[in-house]
Image (tube, rainbow, N blue to C red):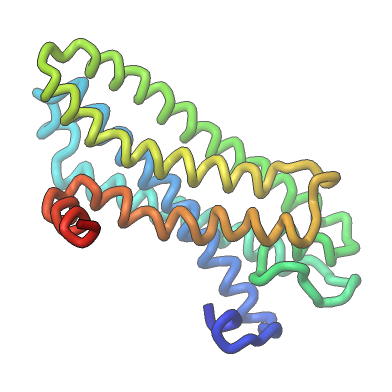
Amino acid sequence: MHNSLWDTTTISFTACAAQVFFLILFMGTEYSLLTIMCYDRYVAICKPLHYGTLLGSRACAHMAAAAWASGFLNALLHTANTFSLPLCQGNALSQFFCEIPQILKLSCSQSYLREIGLLLVSTCLVFGYFVFIVFSYVQIFRAVLRIPSEQGRHKAFSTCLPHLAVVSLFLSTDLFAHLKSPSMSSPSLDVVVSVLYLVVPPTLNPLIYSLRNQELKDAVRKMMT
């Protein structure tokens, strides 16, 4: 944001490392929290009588702590490994922020294979989250379709669909950004895709979740009319 507003194109080595660390920390934690929110909806709809036992305040605190701890460890490993590599192909990144794939392009050491291995491990972890979310939503939709009243089904769907929209947007743009083939890579495409997964999901998060708020709906309707 600072670089964009002040039209600067330079960043110090330390600030670049900090940017990578916090980016991975927040993205990794976001994945974990989205998965926990999916589990919350699964228990609420499929096992409502056990909700207080499975998702008490202590359980929620433990899951939140695990999400932040795993995000911190993942960010620490990636940042330490990436910035220990020798950079021999200049120091200019064809991106508007410090991104690991762009930094690896500047390295001439075979050690970058370790970072690619870490990226693959992270991708497998995200894929595990994705499988868990898909499995949970299959169970959720099966349970919702068995609800006899239309009002009950509508309430259940309105609880799940905003979360599902955020998960789909976040996962699809991020996976495309990091798993697209090198032949598809170009500076302009990299910038567009990065904006998609860095800017669009956080911007839409408050909007998607708050659309369930009746007061906000009424305010939007009043403003439009």
